[in-house]
Amino acid sequence: MDAQSANRWVISEELTCVSLLALMPACAIFLLVLPRSVEPTNFPGLRLDSKEVTRVLDRDRSLESRDGSALERELWKLFLEQGAAERGLTEPPSAFVRRRDQIRRTLVGIQEAPGDKSIEALQARAARHLELALGLSMSRKNAEQVLGSFPNFLERYQLAREGILLAPHFVIRTLYKSRWNLIHDLPATYAFSRVERLAYYGWLTLHTDSAALSLRQEALYEYERLGGSRVAEAKGAFYFQQGQYERATFFLERAAKQHPTLRLRNYALAAAFKRDHSGHLLEQF
Image 1 (cartoon, one colour):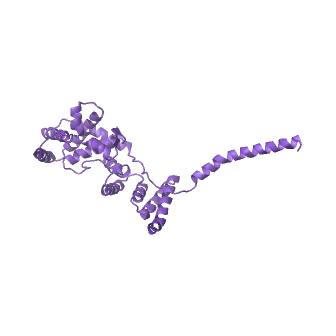
Image 2: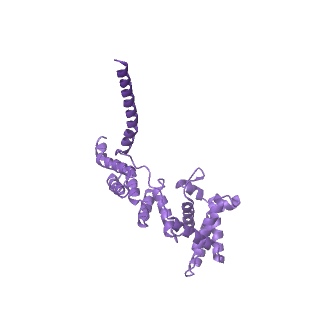
């Protein structure tokens, strides 16, 4: 081989290597976009309308700043006593029963006033004191009265981990308002605005896999009824986790049509695979 031929051979080899190197990223991208079965382990994130959230916060600031009646002050005092009891303050069972009766009677007195905003005002006051307690802007004793057993609730329902808050501020204050309701024997979302109910049910649906199945099913139903976002994807992931692969496939395929993404397409493939093969897998045992 003469020198010119040798040079041509070397150049040809170099061009081949360059071409292969250029082709490799394209092949990698092609492989990444190929349909493949991926189990839907994650739910879509909770999305809330920022304007609705702002309206609630503005309303609460207005309500919380008003002068409360004597009955409101009495009910607030009983609420703080309940928080102290939850933090381990020793008291006989009779004291707990007596306080519950006092709370019930006081609340009835407040509710008798037509068109009164006392309940919403007390909820707003509770949310404001929660913010002060979490921000270490009050004494430890007062913070314990305000928080009660709420830190355990935060951990149980995955709003916090090892004392670090994970959920958005609005969700946390909404769940605390729900605690206020339950202490007063009111429904969990009593006097809530639409966005607060979305925050409550949306968190239980999308971010709390530790909740009881019946509670998550109810939350999912309410979240859909309220017009929550990405409901089909949430339903698909929920039914997949419960092993209901027929339903999971239906909703994940619907979600993939509504939002054509590789992730949702792969979720739908995983559900369809489980649907088509779960019976065969059971026959082997």
